[in-house]
Every structure is written in C-alpha cells, then in structure tokens.
Amino acid sequence: MNDQAVLILHGLILAILLATFLCLGLNLLVFRTLRPGLTPVSHGPVSILIPARDEERNIGGCFGSLIRQDYPDYEVLVLDDNSTDRTAEIVRGLGAGNPRYRLITGQPLPEGWTGKNWACHQLSQAATGDWLVFTDADTIHAPGAITAIVAQAANERADLLSAWPRLVTVTLGEKLIIPVLHVVALGWFPIAFARLLQAFPRFAALLPEKMVRACGGANGQCILFRRAAYDRIGGHAAVRDHIVEDVALGREVARRIPAGMCLRNCDAHPIMDCRMYRSFREVCDGFTKNAHASFEGNIFLWVMVGGLQFIVFFLPFILLLIPSQFHFALVEVALIYLYRVILTLRMRTTWTGCILHPIGHFLAMAIGIRSWINTSGAGVQWKGRTYHPSFPQA
Image 1: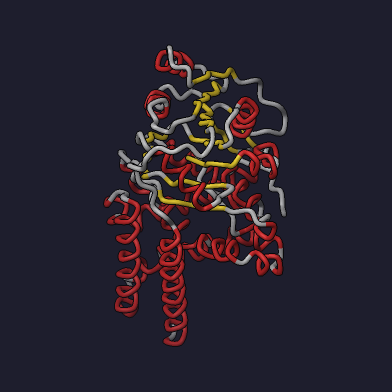
Image 2: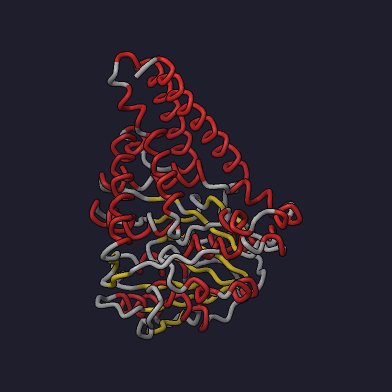
C-alpha cells in the first residue's frame, strides 16, 4: 500500500470515528435517564402487557416485579403463547388473589404473523388502559419503574416512549456480544436527529418520507404507547410479519412526525434490568433472528453498515500488526477504546466486552453474515417457529 493510499484509509477511519463520537454525544444529550423515587401520580390507567412463550425461567422475576408497582392505576396482563413449560403455572401462583392481573391463553398463530406480534396484538385487544406498556418477559422492573416511565411520557407528550434497560450479562458470550448493541445503536442511530425533526415538524414535512421514517426506532424490551397513538398507527397488526417489531413500530410513529406524532427513546438502566440471553448459542440465535431483518431488505444499507463496522471498529486492530501502520492504528484503537469506555460507564454494561472489543465485534459481524444467509434462505428459527421475513418498504 503506497503512502497516499495509507493516508486516505486512515483519514477515512478517523473521519468516521469522529462522526461516530459526534453522533454519540448528540444522542446522549437527548437520551434522558429515567430514575425511581418519583411521587406516584396517575396520568390515566395503564395496562402492562407481557407476551410469554416458554418463559418459566424469566416470568417469575418479571411478573413479580410488575405486580408490586407503586403506580396508582394499573393492570398486568400476561399472554401465555402456547407455552410447553410452567410459564402459566408460575403466573397463576404469583398472581393468586391479586385483582390487578389477568392471564390470557393465546390463540393459534395465524398465517402472516410473527409470534410476538400476534401475542402483543391479543394483549392490546384485552387491555383497558389509556397507556399500553409492552414489556418482554426477561425484564425486571424496580418498584417505581412504571411511575417513572408514564410520567416521562406524559411530560414530553410522547406517543411512543421506548425505555432501554440495563443489559445484564453473565456468560462470556453475552459479555462479548450484547454490548455491541450500544456500540451500533447509540453511535450510528439518529436519535438526536429524530428529536430535531419532532421539534420542527414543518421541516420534517419537506423531507422524503423514507428519510423521516428511517429516523424511527425503539427497543422492544419495554415500549409505552398512548392508546390513541397505538390505534392510530394500526398497532402490532400494522407490522404483523416484521421480525424486528420494535424498530418497525418506531418507524411507523416516525413517519408521522410531520403530522405531530412524538417518539422518545430513554435510558432506563436505573429502573429496569434485562438479561436477553443466557448462553453464547442463545446470543447467536437471537441476533441472527434480528440483525438482517432490521434493515428491511435494504441490501445496500446492510452492506454499507457492515462494511463501515469492519473498517472503523475492527480493521485498526489488524493494522496494529503492520509496522508501517502502527502509529496511525494506535491512535484509532485508542479512540475506539475511549468510545467503549464512555458507553460502558454510561450504560452500566460489562467491562469484559469493552476490554475484549475486537473479539466481540468480530463475533457480532459473523452473526450478521449468518443472519443474512439464514433470512435469505431457509429462514430463522425462534422458540420452535420458523420465520421467512418479508420486508415492507415505506
């Protein structure tokens, strides 16, 4: 590689790294942290909705934490999605005598729906609240979590508020790969730009609808909707066949920013924990299910993002091994670690993933390729079901 090519390569890496830092900084400025301890005040009745399929190892912690909330007016609905384990039994035992809860038996999965979307749709049909909180069975909520989430949504007049829990990791595979979610999402996702568009909806109306829609997204581990807004976008029925329903729902709200709809993403690590997976195999299968589907069939965007991930977050570690590249690469690696340290401190994630960044990022990229292969071919499997994603375009 000649000197000019070296300068161009390292200039590109540094430019993208600096842009990533800028995006991260702007995103963290608007990424409000939700905290417990607020005085419980009702902003209207809340329905807490938990889809559960074979969740016996998680449902006790999740459901138990939610029936002990301090919010004045709420109900907890659990949908047992044809579980083959003790999910329903555990819910009945914990909820015995508690008038706030209902256990719903899920109906068979119709053609054209993914399992979670169908479960959430059924829950929404049974819910009575003015606010709908969809939360995964692998989350655990502090006693004031619902009070904090609803208060934030009410204060910001949000139609959709997505609360990002603290990601709990135990095994090495979890520690290496799961924090990569924050590396990509908070450094590359336009949370701050979406906030800007919502402040100036007339400006948003001048932009192409696809661009505005692409600014939307949410974290499905905990999503709060105003009931009226949920019905307005068509609810989970509008994204019935979408594997990554949280991103799709966020985009359905975002596309309506010119009409005044409001989307918020918030940091909920002080009030909520989530252990997504419990082994390297589960991490691989879960990320395989979601990684490619998040791009909704846009192969150009998938290749571009994957390529940039390789160039910016992995290639500098390879270049360290080349004597003529060492000094440039050392600066880039130092910036990468600074970026990881900021995220580790801010999001309270594992230091193992930070220190072993190149290993975790390599594994994440390999899973991304596996996701593309599977979704383009035999389909992806999850909890006993096989999905062949379709990719609706705006």
